[in-house]
Amino acid sequence: MRTQQVMKRHIYSPTKQITNTVLLILVLLSQILSVSSASDQYARSFIQNVSDNMSIQALSPYKNKDGLEYWPLCTSKNNQPRNVSGTNPHQGTDLTINVGELIYPIYDGEIVYMDTDISSQTGYILVRSDIGIGEYAYIEYMHIVPISGLSVGQYVYTSIPIATIDDYLRYDSHLHIGRVNETRDIHFQIYDLFADCVNWTNGSDLDVFSYPSYNEETAEFSIYAYISSDTENPEFYGGYGRFRLKYITLFYSVNGNAWQHTDIADCDPNYKYTFNIQEKTNAVKGDTIEYYITGTRDNESSYDTSFNDASYTVAYYPAYYSHPDAVLSGEKADAIALTIKISK
Ligand SMILES: [Zn+2]
Image 1: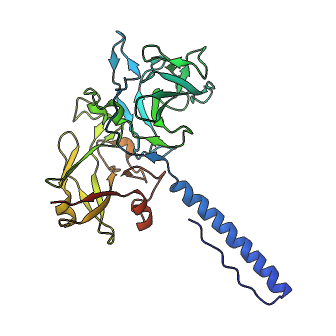
Image 2 (image 1 turned 45 degrees about the vertical axis):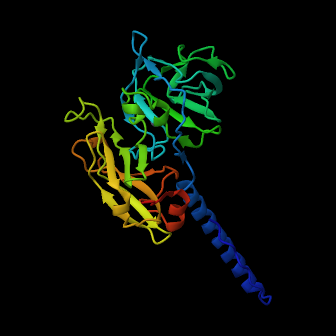
Image 3 (image 1 turned 135 degrees about the horizontal axis):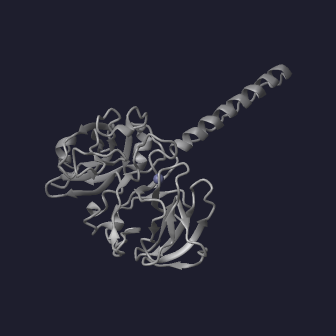
């Protein structure tokens, strides 16, 4: 946000003029610095709008040795707070796949951008696909070695590999995959690309938050939320690194009144949080609830140890900002809030 400078006219005085000029420069410098750090943190980095009519099911980017689709372990979801350098929350999804394994496009499409420089393990392919939703889907594949001979403009198909997983240089071997916008600076949720995929728990292994639903009759709200970590979890789910959040928090404003919040820790074994949003907010028939939700990752967990002592712990639904504080200002909240009207 910019503040307007209001310049007042003064009677001319050379000394005062110089002092004022120095002050003005200092003020402008401090504004530039604060604006740039604030706009980095609150720059838009995510889009989270659920596509109900995603008619073309994506395929896994990995197949097993028999050529059958295989769903690798996710070690870091899209929108997941993490304890490493790089974007935080994570802008994209990491799937653990061994060095040299083949990567397939999840949709047929056209390569529209490539980076074949693998000196920093940042080989990259961007594929643009028409998946019948009225806009192109752009899928990015990173930490890969593009198959030699591929080039921008070429069509690729889900049955033919486009890359192999790169050797370890800076990161463990994995595929970073994401759905991005054309300019690659905003990440969409991707769970809904795999909505029919049971083996990937309907895609919810891929985003911190997935499958929100609201029942107008009962005012029951539900959403899935959990963490996928590279820490193994031998206590649960056959060693898969899925972990409960410490809690989720419902932030709400009824009829435009002040923002309030309440924590919800209980979820079912599939990490589905269900609550009556009318009771949580004391809203009555005809009220309008604005809301957003945060999920707080446990940075003191005895299970999910790779996140211990992490300083940034929150994920947002809807995901929007690059690296927002744990509580938003009213203005920042209003910009991302979703709306529910209580009709019963
Ligand atoms: Zn990644």
